[in-house]
Amino acid sequence: MNIATPSTLLLAALVDSPAIYSSAMGTMDPSTALFRYLIAIPVCGLMLAFLRSITKSYQDERQRVEDEAAAEAAAQERAEREQAEAAEDAAGADAYEGQDRRGRTLA
Image (tube, rainbow, N blue to C red; front, side):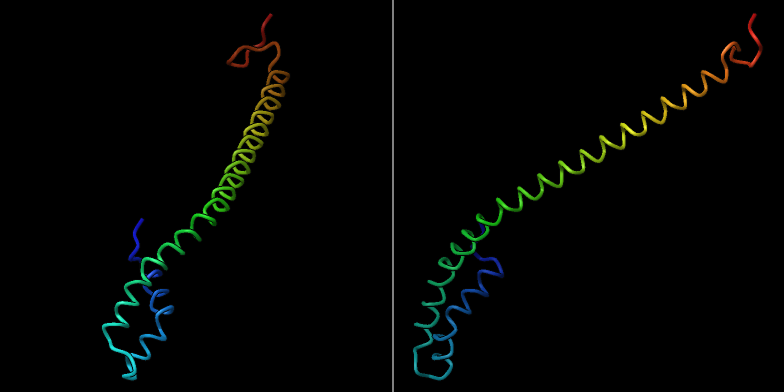
């Protein structure tokens, strides 16, 4: 798990924005604001990891459903193709009954 992702750093800056603002205005020591930001990074990383773990199960379920639908569509397409080939073979067998491969009539 990578804690220092851009989303984590951005969320930590958002959470720590009051301290950053106070530091910019001179009412708070910059080292205190930086310390608070450094504390906010792992806290926000854990919060985002928890959120990702919750949403991953939904993503996995959606992928499974899509895979099943694709497999079902492929099976249906294969069955239709086999049915069409069987019908074509049956029509060809009726047309060439009593003839060899070269079309000569058998006795």
